[in-house]
Structures are given as structure tokens and as C-alpha cells.
Amino acid sequence: PASSWSKAIYKVFMSDCSNVPQLKKQYEELKTFTTDDAALLQHLHAGESADNAVEASFNAKSTTRKSLSQRCVTITLPPELDHLFPCETGSFYLTKRSLKKDFIQMQTKDESFKSDTLDIVLFDGEMFVKKLKACSAKHNTSYEASIAMASKITQKFNEKLHEPHGRSVLIIKGLRPALDKYAKTKGYPLQSRFVVDLVLSHLTVSHNIVVLQAIRKENDQEKIIRALSLACLQFQLLTLKI
Image 1 (cartoon, helix red, strand yellow):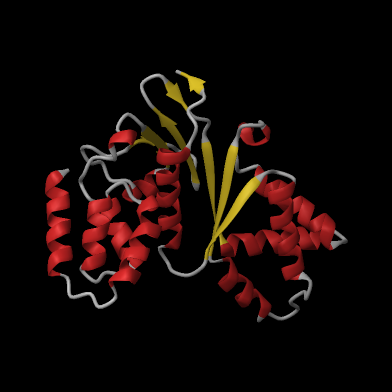
Image 2: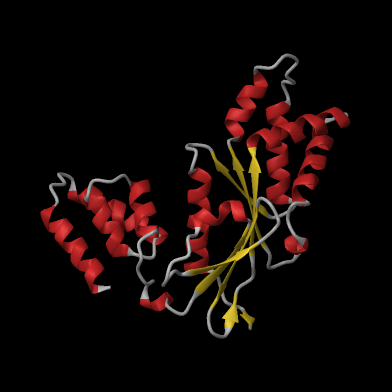
């Protein structure tokens, strides 16, 4: 809206930023991840970090770009994740309640067409290590253990996992700290990290699952989920007739 750009232009004019070329480069890289370019520019010139600027522009109460105005992302998620997508007038998303824990489904629609679904499973690093221990104890070789564990993880996705147009994402939160903690325990098997690599390879190659790790900060997982919703809005192909 004009008012949003007016605020952004004022902030740029009054900004005391000493490295404008760097800020411009940041803006060009980050605007893909927001539906409000003006808000992003405004928050960057206010001196906020890239993460905070994207977060603030994501929550800005503004309409989407004109070319995307007819598109809407339907997001089905459990109640404990409701805070990720607050109900706001003019939002690019519509939320639905799901009773399936740690599972999110996204689908983009317009007036006549819709996309394939994007299925997202959330996995905690501590739980990953727990399943790793159990599978390693039951099987004689690292390869067998990795196959068994990958199979267990795929069960968390719905039946569309093996369909040719299905899209599936596994987000693992805190895997590295969990593995580091496990490595300090008595009797730690030295091949454990090798087994983890095999599991992730099986998921990617054999099951066509994209594996993302939230490893830097506590809220990295939330930022990844929001980024995926914006990716659905802008890039999902609407190939199915409603």
C-alpha cells in the first residue's frame, strides 16, 4: 500500500546507514521471503538484523503483491503451532486445525486451481537419537539400522509420500546438540554419526524427502516453516482443477 511505502521512503531518507550498497544487497536477497517489500526495507534501514527484518515484515498487516493477490496458502497444523500464523485480515494464508502432532500440510489455491500438497514433519533431535539407539540395538549392521530408522520416519508422512507429485519435507530441530550429548555418554558407538548420515541419505534418495536442519537458534524451526509458506505462495504450481 502507498502508506507502507511512504513510511519506508521516510525511513530511508532519514537513515544514517553508513553502508548503503550492503543494505541494498541484503534487501534484494531477502525480499523473496516476504510479501511486504516496503516493510522489509523500512526495518532494514531501522538497523534491525536480517532475521528480525524478515520476521517483522512477515507479520506486517499488508496485502500481498498484486500478482499474488488471488493466491492463498491453506495451512493445516496442530494447535501448539497456531502462534506461527496468527489470524489477521488480509493475510496470504488460511489456517485449519489438525489433530496430527508435529505434522503440517500446505497447499496453494486461487479461484480455480490448486497445487499439490507440501507435507512437513517436525522431528526433535533428542527423539532422533532415541530412535537411533533403538534401531542400532536391533540390527547387526549400520546399513540395516539406517534402513529401519528411515522407514520409521517415513511412517510419519501421509500416504501421498510415494506419489510422483508429492512434496515432503522433514525438519529436524537440534540434531547436532543431541548427537554431541550422546557422544559423551558411556559406551557411545563410534559409528553413530555414520548411521545418521546413512539415514538422511536414505530419506533423500530413496524416499524423495527434503531434510532441513534447524540448528542455529531456538526459533530456527519457526522461521523455516514460515519461509516454506511464503515459498508455497510464490512458487507452487497450480496444476489441479478445483
